[in-house]
Length: 484
Image 1 (tube, rainbow, N blue to C red):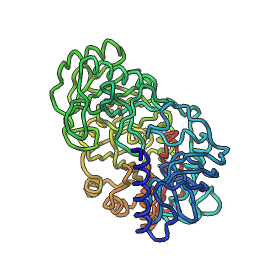
Image 2: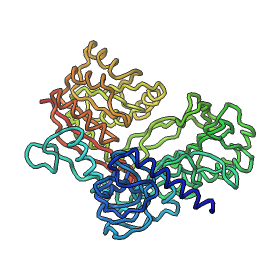
Image 3: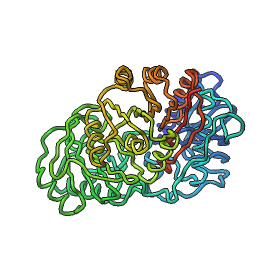
Image 4: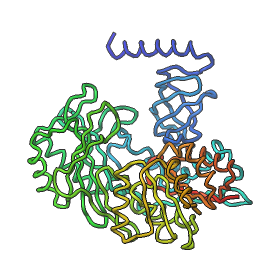
């Protein structure tokens, strides 16, 4: 028996063993099934049905019929790999990226852009109804929550101003690209259609220089090797570029030669930094960052405001859509120039400074000290004197501000994907501002938090989704809440 046939037999035996332990599940691993696709998951996988059982099928679209091989089985759902498209969706398009099927960076290039926007809005509606238990979620009929159509891009390509590239080893030596879908294997990449082209070229230059100097790639299994990630930033309005070399250790052999090679080939680079991360973790950055050459920051601009961006700063990656998102936040804050505004999770002060132009006074709070340093620098850079920033947890700092007589009329929150800390929700309800503006990058945690705020006495008025990440499953939202 050939090795391949032997593996197939073993796989089917394992499938039968699994099926025996999962009574009522109509499929086994390795089985070929034909199923209808009835929806999409939040990750962009097709939701298929086979004899009442749910199968998630990568790259399948709603309305399609596919033949697929079952690759995993659970009690309530399994996963399958599409092997034949029997009936094709009218919304299916050919993905233009040559490594799309292997790369896990985008999930939806095979779905028309108009359909992506409709699906993302429905994803928000479904989350608000199913998780948030909010009533009358729709397009504005009656007194329900209005979910507007998603604000999309005229040209949904080449939008990312930051590339964060994992480094590994391949047959030809050092490689860098993106992780293969569902694995830790790196797909080597020299061209990415959602990256701005200067970033694409800069990553290639850094990798070529590393190969020339025989820089070792980090191995996640052994913990050995030097270069873990290459992070590059491009400031659209100034053209400035930054390189951050994330290394497994402090010492870089031939560091100055590496810097010289990058500078010779990339004239717009004004900052080359090193970040040290020796931890066995998937987190990109470590705690220590130093400048190898040039400036500590690069400068970019959004809607007339300048921002200094350091190596580890959080700065939205889609500058075109960021202006639309933050302008919506200002609109929902409904400022007259007399209000006191608090921006929790303020980061480097991007939303804070947008708000400062229309409020009497704004206060930003953020737990990361380096971000607050950047925020203060950005306020000075723009001549904004009615903004104050403090390091700390918002749920601790905000009550102290209130004891000092700072009562917010508006609170703005822009939390990470996990949503607001429960203690912050409780603090906002205690401070009881007239309005809350919630900026979210995850509809599920947004819906959870909106339920808590609604139970605490706020009415969710309207939601404006913004497509910050075309061709991926992500959608950003800005939400208006008013005190009942």
